[in-house]
Structures are given as structure tokens and as C-alpha cells.
Amino acid sequence: QVQLVESGGGLVQPGGSLRLSCEASGGTFSDFSDYIMGWFRQVPGKEHEFVAYISWKGGTTAYDDSVKGRFTISRDNAKNTVDLQMNNLKPEDAAVYYCAADGESVGLGFADRADHYDYWGQGTQVTVSS
Image (cartoon, rainbow, N blue to C red; front, side, top):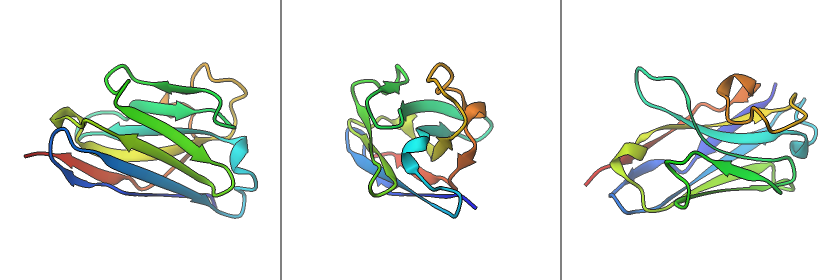
């Protein structure tokens, strides 16, 4: 069973930074580089919102406009990890953040859609407040 485990969430003041990390493991997760990796976030009562994705070997990244220029996604295929560096955090960034893996898609056309991801972590809470 594939497992994704996020870490790094917490409470930060507006303008502060956090780095989220997600580690993949599991018997069928034979090659991390076979998966598009994404970060999504969710607030109560709303659907998962796309934050960022990174392609199989990290050559292509994309971000939602709301985080562009502040967040950076990266991956280390040797360690089966994907990180999200979040700078200049705003109160509206507060949410539960999830990493997700897509092992079926052969292109990136729908990589910003939550329903294209096969595996999800349990989420990590990010709170932005003074």
C-alpha cells in the first residue's frame, strides 16, 4: 500500500515561512520518479485547492496564481520526497496541506486537478496568524 506522509506544518506569523515535506513509501511505490507529485490545500467546507505540482524528474513545475512567487515545490527522487517551501505566508494560506501522487497520467495537462491523483497523504495543518 502506497503511503504519503506530510510533515512541517505549524503556526507561523504573517510574512513568515514554513517548509512542508512529504515522504512516499509502500510496496507498490517502486519508482518515485514515475509519479507526478502535487500539493493541494483544503479549508473546511471547500474542495481541495491546487497549490503546485512538479513533473516526474522535476523539470516542470506549476503554481496556482495565489502562491506564485512565494511558494517553491521541489523533489528528491533518491529520497522519495517532495517539498513545498512557503515564504511570505498570508492568513489566506491557512489550510490543511496535502501531498498527492499521480501515477497514471502521461502528460501534465490535468496535473492541477485533484481528481487525477491516486494517492494522498493525511495532511498537515498550516496556521497563519499573529
